[in-house]
Image 1 (cartoon, one colour):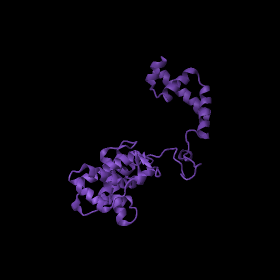
Image 2 (cartoon, rainbow, N blue to C red):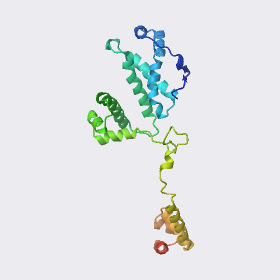
Image 3 (cartoon, rainbow, N blue to C red):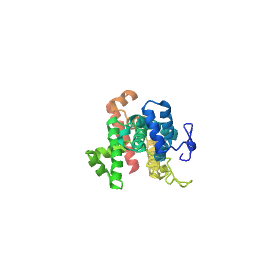
Image 4 (tube, rainbow, N blue to C red):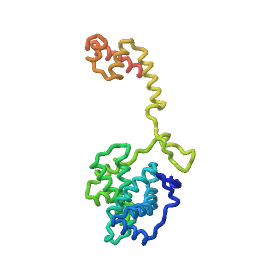
Length: 257
């Protein structure tokens, strides 16, 4: 994806590189309402959008979608930029582009998360970047929670809530073409040898019951019905259901002893 040349119909290899003076002059013109200058300014800053988008490539999102969302962030930055701020436009625009992409990823997550929880997670991500720049290392969850003045559990839960779930087909080592997938490293507690043997034993035990006893056990323990419901379906009293059920369970217990 990083090596892709054409994004949203734009050939990134021929995007212009404008000088600081050229960008400044275009900004003055567009602030006066010159639409041609605005379009030229947007086109001249698409390399900036591309550089931000590449930070998110590892998430396996569609690059075209991220680039379009990044351009929305760029336009918002242009509309809100104040020439009197005495800062470079790129310094002002990058956080807005990043924020727009993160909102897109957050709102389009496969797992639906409440808005309040997503807001906390977004604030936590912003705080993490701020602390990482300040501390020159990745901050821990306690430091992030302290920065936000929120309980540690609440911040940790919010961050976990927006973390994308891993696919069982995810390779453990992406550099290896024959890499083992994540699903192959997870134990199967339902189809293991012991479970299979138990199922065979239960099947053999059921063979020793009569048809009515089998029916009662299936209705009670496979379909989860009450003794009253079973009595109505089978056509006998609840007391008879209870007696037959106890006898059947007693036989099965002896079968395993």
